[in-house]
Each structure stands twice: as C-alpha cells, then as structure tokens.
Image (spheres, rainbow, N blue to C red):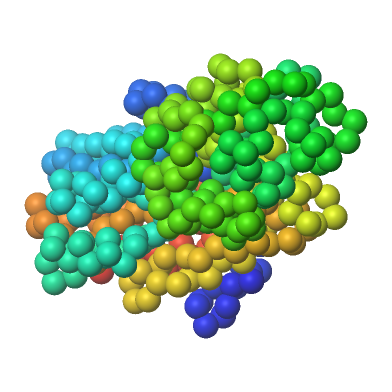
Amino acid sequence: MKLSRKNGLRASAIGALVVSGALVLSACGSDNNTETPTKDGGTKSSAAAAASNIACDGAKGQILAAGSSAQKNAMDLWVKNFQAACSGVEVNYQAIGSGGGITKFNQGQVTFAGSDSALKPEEVAASQKICKGGKGINLPMVGGPIAIGYKLDGVDNLVLDAPTLAKIFDTKITKWNAPEIAKLNPGAKLPDTTIQAFHRSDESGTTQNLGKYLSATAPADWKYDPKTKSWPAPNGQAANGSSGVATAVKDAEGSIGYFELSYATANKISTVSINTGASAPVAASTENASKAIAAAKIKGTGSDLALSLDYTTKAEGAYPITLVTYEIACDKGNKADTLSTLKAFLAYTASEEGQKVLPDAGYAPLPAEIAAKVRAIVPTLS
C-alpha cells in the first residue's frame, strides 16, 4: 500500500503483496456483468469464478449501494459470485462517483457507498443522522494507480513531472511541443498539436486524489483545494465517470486525462511515466503503485481504517499517483432488514475468496494485515 508497527501494518507485509498480486484499480465498464476486462485487455467470464464456499449468513432480499466508478468491475465480480451463492439475494451497485455515493449514503438511500477517498469530518458528522448511535466508517477494499492517459500519434513513451502535469490540467500549457514537455522528452517528435485536457464532470475521489498529488508535489503550479472531489480548475473538457474520460481520450487526438489503470489497459490507451526525482521515470503499473502504497499509514481510529498516502515519494520505482478505494458503512445503526446481507456481502468481498478473484479484472488483494483488520470489523457492524 513506511507502515508503522503501532498501526498494525508493516511494510514487509505489503511488500509481499507484489509477489501475490499487483495493485491496480479497475475500470468501470458497462453494467453488463457477464464479462469483465482482464489485465491484457481481453475479457473473462466471471461465472466460472463464482465462489463455492461463500457464507450467506442470513443474507436475503435486496441491498442498494452506489459510488466509486473505480471499483465497479470489482463489484461486478463480487455481486455475480455472491448472488450465485446466495439464492434470492440482489446487490445493486450504481457507479455514480464517490461524491454521489457518499451523498446517497448520508441521505439514507443506500446501504453502503463506494469511495476513492475517506470520509471528510463533515461527512462523518452527517452520517450520524443515518447511523443511529454510530457513524460512517471507511473499510478499504482495493488500491492502485491513477494513470495519466494520452493520445498523441508518434509518441509512445511520454514522460511528465508534477509541475508540467499541473500546468497541463490547468491549461497553462496548451501545446504538446511546449518547452516544458520537450525538456522531459529529449528526442521525442512532439507535434504542434493543441492539448485537449479532460477531467471528471462528476464528484470523484479519483479527482480528489489527483488534486492531492498535484497540491503536494507542485504547490506553486496547483493552487486549488486538494480536498475537493469536484474539478477545481476553470478550463479543460469534462466527461462523466472514469469511463467517460477514458473514452474521450481514446477518441481525441492530442488528448490527455486521468483514470484508473485498467481503463487504459482495456482501451489500449498510452500512459505517462512520471518523473518523481528518482533515478528513472516511473511507469503507471500495478507493481510500481504497490511500492508507493507501501508508505501508507492508518489515520482512522477505532473501526475506521482510513489510510494516509505519501504522494511525494521519490522511492525508486514507486508510482506516486495512487488511491485506495473504500466501502463506507455504518459501524452502528444499520437498518435491520439489510444488516445481515450487508455483513455477508462485505465479509465475502474482504475474504480470501473474494480477494482472490480480483487479479483477473486488474485488481489486487488487500495487503494481508489490512485485510485482517477489515475482516475483524465487518462482523461487528450492527
């Protein structure tokens, strides 16, 4: 995901994750759950992967959830397998963006929300009206790189740094052959093409994580609020959801945008390597994101497992633009008619059985010690 021992996390445990599975966040494709993108850009039926030993534990009826588009394909896998094992149960997840999911959660419209960023203090306070006697908590499920995708004919290995990215997304650099880009890419044939910078139109944890990275690493060039989930810069072009941004980049020459790595993989979109100050630029890959996330620390208390990421890392091979995606649920005060299904479903997603299906869709299992904490907390939800 430098983890401190007092937080119950050790970097060595997370480092081992690189061996067992690479970290990457999934794209949110169509709502058709019959096939999911694989790491090589193909598809694989998830029906065969349905777990045979999922514990339904009284799950019944329907639960509604909404939020992060980054975890949509993971949800597709989990929902298909869970519903196959638990007859008559329906889990409906709407990929409307992290901000929309949290809003619905705090309005009592969904049983849980998916978010690519932890709840803000004011969102926790608002959740207390819905979570009677309790509050909303952050339960991490997967994490990985936010890729900077681009389409520029004749340029296959583009390198950018944080200040240059900030100026591009703030439309202060508008041509691909700008001196700042040329300096980072000696020998590249950069065309005099206008840059089309795409961003999310919806509230998004992916946007927030990119903003945190730019604010931390290029404060002189990115002066916007790093806490906002809405796109803060006045210019650029907007598209809805990670899938919308990926489609826009794929279709427009001279374009650039941000989305989870598997969107780039599935759409065959080239991605930027980041000059972090390490000895070599760092590519957006699952292994490289894992090295960066290894510096995460738990900042939540009690049942809350919110993580703090180090966006300024210069560790060799560490890709710095990363996120961890959470499920948001009440620790206490969940609705009685959906509680058993909520607990059974989250117990499955965090279980070894649920985590091991993720690599085929371009995700990776949680680090062992974080997964153990999630598995210990889910049964205590009430």
